[in-house]
Length: 270
Ligand SMILES: [Zn+2]
Image (tube, rainbow, N blue to C red; front, side, top):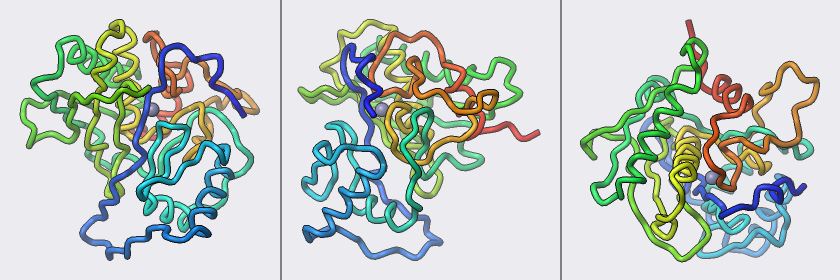
């Protein structure tokens, strides 16, 4: 199912899907599983095809699988997913989440440290993106989610830093770790320093979505979030303005689906 064609505008945003395989100290550490045989690679590719990817868009390289050019998953993580997940149903679009989200109480104040060399307009975008997430639920009654800027790297959860690659990703972010902490970093590709401010704002708001556990709305990867449009008998096939689509737009606010999906992941418990 191709749901992205209508959004090709500038470039794909990117995310690194849980390269980290940190396990909490109370869990028994599992043996590293790296596919070293063709049949293990083939079964991993079959898994991605079941998830909705085309086989030709799945590449195995240096111990990692690269999907649609811009999503990276370690072989170890793929093995864990195959072991843990039941087979998904037929591909659907609309909001998706990663296996792990940010655990209580960390979601109440996710602290971002911005490296000093991040240009001012990107800093402004980070501040704006934090404000977007903090205020997505107008009256604050339904969603419990907080983010802030930390002046100290050591007292932060997520580091924002500049990188450079002559490639078609604007920024990329880690998803939450398996012990429920926010994604550890957001890297901005300085190749895209020339984006207009509203696209920068969209890009960072999108990356923070990965930091708290969202996958792409326009890809069938991860766990489907049921109930984002509860008043409809079937969810819409696309959400063309979702902040979690994989192609950047000018920022124009969250969609109803974005807000509903966040409410499902981070509800305010009264
Ligand atoms: Zn992304």
